[in-house]
Length: 202
Image (cartoon, rainbow, N blue to C red; front, side, top):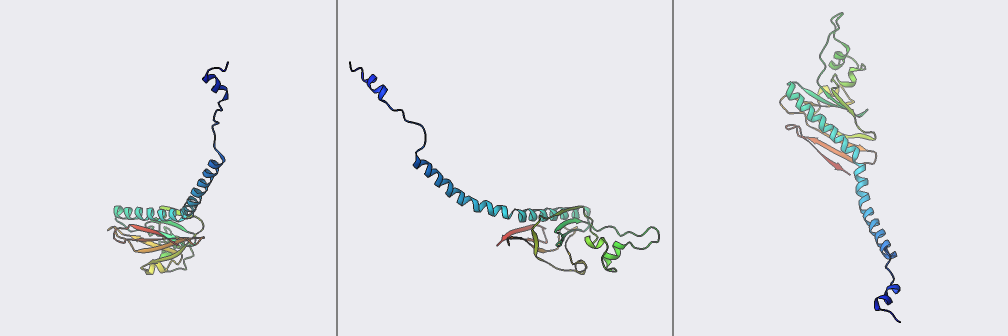
């Protein structure tokens, strides 16, 4: 009449529904908000410094290549930075050529020797062959550049030149690049080993 205990409990059982309660959903949302708040500044700072980091890698690679080529070729190599166009390149000096018609020195040689006003194309690259060249990312500028200046450096006001010698040494320099947010990166080399160390500045 009343049935077995199993029959009595069967129809009256309520199956527990799979899902989340409102409290659980709110708790998850709060945790996600906290994690996002912690992570966003880190990623934003990383993105802001990406152009500076890329520029530092470019200069470092150029310097390593210039040092290696100088030792291998047994000739001076030069890394050049045009701070007006933010172009960086490296190479050796172009060979001094004479005009085949009259034996006179070419205009680029006269420019490099300082006998002209430097308005020819040679004045834009200081007579350095552009074996490898790159433009640094937009929005960057040179804030500081220090080195032991020479007379040759004084002839090219728009160019910053670092010379690498066959004995593996190079000219010392300090370069600080700044982006349009005021964040900067400072690079300084070791003139003996040629290694460049860099650090971010606020």
